[in-house]
Length: 133
Image (tube, rainbow, N blue to C red; front, side, top):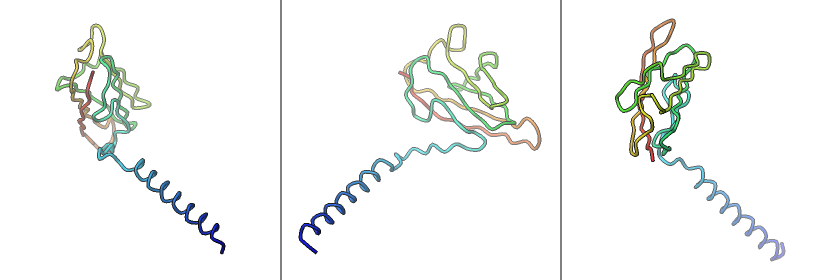
């Protein structure tokens, strides 16, 4: 082989090493597990997220369950939430005439409790925190 061929091979190997290292750094988890217990499918805001004072809360659960939402230890009245049983989505947000008009700055704790609507009982709950600005 000619010396220029060696240079090209070494340059290619070096570039590959840099790309693999960069991809590894970008794909390493940050240590916060986002796994949710079954039957929960999604939560918003997520764990340790920072949101605005008027943020909306959304929780998705598998079909066949009901949800109850608690904010900072206080149960959110069912009349203030929106529940779509076919998709298993519960939503709530602060507003005029509701439990809160807006989130105060700082940390807030959410808790959801679920129960299966038919069949074998399967109660459970899950808690997480978020921060409001």
